[in-house]
Image (cartoon, rainbow over all chains, first blue to last red; front, top):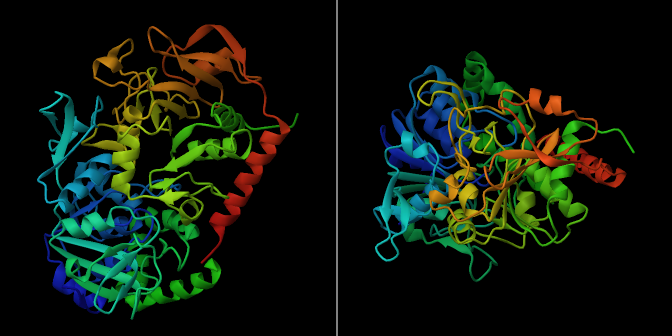
Length: 286
Length: 257
């Protein structure tokens, strides 16, 4: 049953050191404010799952929260490298980062299998390339009906899924619109979940009969954090801040500069710092 | 005819390879520019699909990421990412996959994973993303990449997604039924696979480019087809539409918070 709480309480209650955590959002609705709270609370030894580790995972990795990363594309989209991710893989700073690397198709299938309560995902993939040579979790199975060889990987069953959404009502029913990514699957696959939303409302409002809604009894904690996806975006609220994605390249390049930026902008701030992005962009998005 | 840069020739040559009724899975960067140029010039009916789940999208500016709001707002519909990869890509609904990469070999296998060894990489690249399954599930593959000795290599450090594997019928022997790379468009030339060996072979050279230049910017001995054409230079309209697209994209992406 969903519990409406503050973000700090939600992270405190849901995420423990050593947990496997999936913060999802495919470019859209990336839970940046929740990621910052994990960093502020000093969580350690996490295994992080995410299709497209981007800025928020660069920050979690650079701040030493992460032992292992399960992923399929680790870059700053359209800009270039994630420097903190690269520093961890190439130089072991601030600590060694174990990788379990997949393709997008594999990750999406693994979330769906997790949501469906299956032990593994089966799909047509990983043919001929080198990824199966470096990831022992990639196996082949034979279709019992046709004899076709297919790829199989374990389902994703994270301890905790963390997502950001547009709205929740006071019971904790959560509405997601726009680029949907794998958030619904991630929440349904996880044992616990934290959902940040742009606003908590009395009624979810006018919506398509087929709107994507996570019922309150599938959701753990719901926290209202306006602007909480910044610099990612929330369709209908504010746009993706592409300029910040470009700026991140310079912020993350050097270790000292990165640490100083994190101290000023994350460690010494709270979730309320995100609200100004919600407001500024709401005007710009109209 | 106006002056143009080799990169502009590359994007324009790639755009021309696309047809009005194509259904195309689009990667970010050069592929996205080429696909949208085609849509804004000779192929207004082309269906562009981005892996964020946006089907038949018509962005006014090029997306910086595969999931920019622009893609969703201008799409016919947006599906979840598992549905994108299962029903649409794996289901065989997509005719052309448009890819780029960090390294390519003569059989158009691609590396976007690491430079150096996997365990101790010299450069850790972003990784495969959608490419491993795009490469085998789309009807055919177009690749767009600027040439250079570090990117056009004799041996890939890592095979992220397959092209024609080791040539001949090696791709089909893996059980893959799709065609694989049918076009490689560079800033110097257009390549197509040799019908027998499947080695990517120069079939058209961009204006003002020499065979030596193409060879100097590749790490293997380049094969030239018996008949090599000259790529028609960009028309003034192609250049104008491409430059307009880039200009409004740059403006949109630098808008501060």
